Length: 107
Length: 125
Image (cartoon, rainbow over all chains, first blue to last red; front, side, top):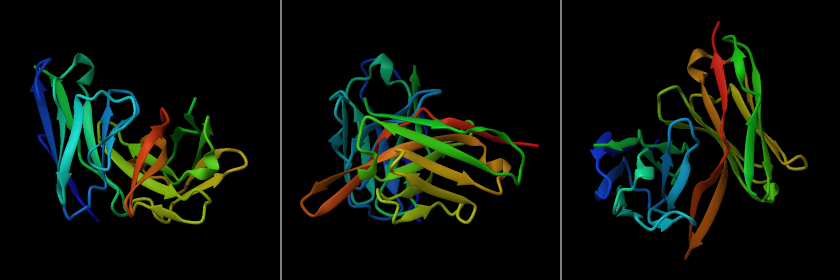
């Protein structure tokens, strides 16, 4: 099984900050990676897929990059509605696996 | 609009069974693979199972293999999860999600683009 890790597990940031979240796979996943945002009590929402492709309707302040085993999610200027938990997920092979999540809260 | 609505959750005793449903609307259900994903209280997301668009292939997480069965009825636009021999650790919110795919050159990239709001399963005596 492919294990996914994320760092940091949580962070505190201010509106306007640039935020970067890292996701690492236990083996290469060839950009088969998606990022999801989840707010308390809500379903996850797709942000990016294929590591760097922005889902329709998602603000352009979200971006993704990476290759091989290492990937990043960047929020260029944090907005109040971005405070949430972010998960990466590999789609390279079953069982599909999610990272443990990164909680972004208000400093 | 594109929508997934789960139902069938509830409180059930350990060892008993429960069947979840996921009603799809606003898209051609029979053209999409479908997933179940769960989230235990205060925990992260855990993939449970996937079924191909035509039901021909199914894959499961090891934690539910042999106990849970994913199925679909394309004539009813509905996805199911039959859960048997339930355990306390199966307590979670269960989400259904649609599988999308994009092709870049010769590579297929899959992702879950539409999610339901979830249904809560509590396994407790």
